[in-house]
Length: 200
Image (tube, rainbow, N blue to C red; front, side, top):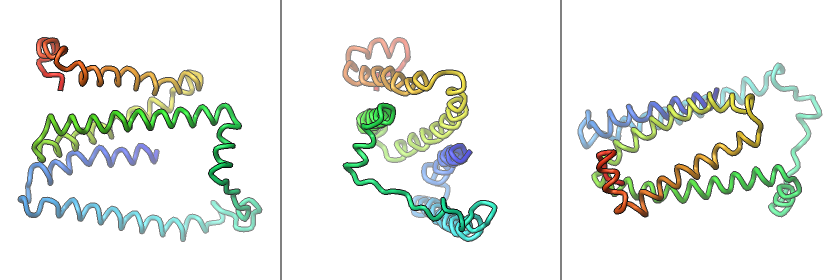
């Protein structure tokens, strides 16, 4: 539920940002003022919520027993070498670490090139901002949708099948993405004829 609520905020960023930054309803000089005020208000609200939780929820005996041995027991901290040893001592944790590492490398490789191509497509600052705000809104809506779908995947398929969805999706979309980049000239006739658009 917290993830869904967080992505509702991401979905709202697009319309709010477009209203103030792209449409320039307050004029060029003041367009950043409401965005800055919203950011400050959100930060203050976050701090107040954190303090309230620390003082009222985490001290409530219904949620926390200060006399329990579990509460007093400190977590054992591992060194970097011990952390790696722990990761590779378990086949499953090692595979999860490899999955996360591979995902991070894949996303960073694609994202840098993708943002450069978006800059190429939208060289104007307002057009680029409008595109990125719209993208973030779609990303928020998509994340909510896939959180709902994803929460039911493990109930229907095995963990291995569920874990394979992300690499398979990155493989197919990555191949399509890099094909449009590296074979752009060769594909331009096809994309203009079928999609009425250039590969970019």
